[in-house]
Length: 236
Image 1: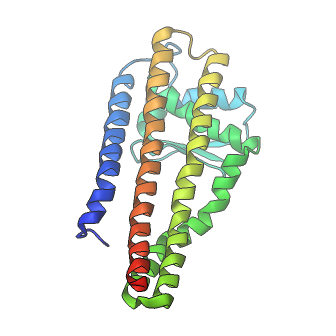
Image 2: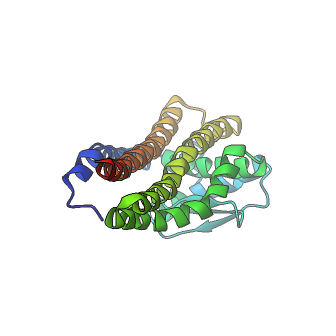
Image 3: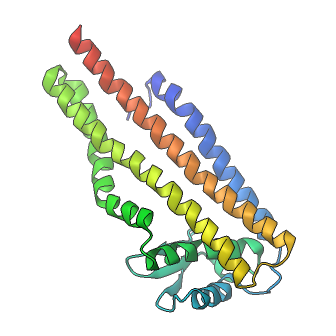
């Protein structure tokens, strides 16, 4: 929308660098540890089923998705979806990613409050992401007191996305902590190299959410700059 505004790049350049670095790191760690076979010799699908049983999650169904690194847990349908590389791979990366998604299933089963809070935000965030920038843009065009009120309403709607990104961080970090504990107690990770690999993959994945939060904050600050600038012009 404001891609030709130099101030947009001033605000967003650091976020773009972080997001690029996060994607490079996660792809690099996945590539490295997907080439290291886990000592159990289990594929991601096999490890997932064993860990689900070990964690008392017999009601969770396992499915395949075709997107690379599209692994996720769907709390609405109680389904854990694995990408081909994870489902079929017998690597350290495969069991680390599978265990992380099982961490989300455990959160769901135990009613983990941050997960519930994030899920409750989804409808409002979806609406806010569509209407927020439209209201801000409309407010900037209309100007005056009414325009400022519209722009502030848009800013508040857009801010929900930042709240969602902030709420996501503890959910993801907790899922990774659960994954490491589950792999250790189930006896699937016993050697130092495997522990190093699991930690590396999960740390890289966590950084993607930190980068996403930074991008959300900086974009919100940019929109706030526009709205406050409108307010300043109105006072003058």
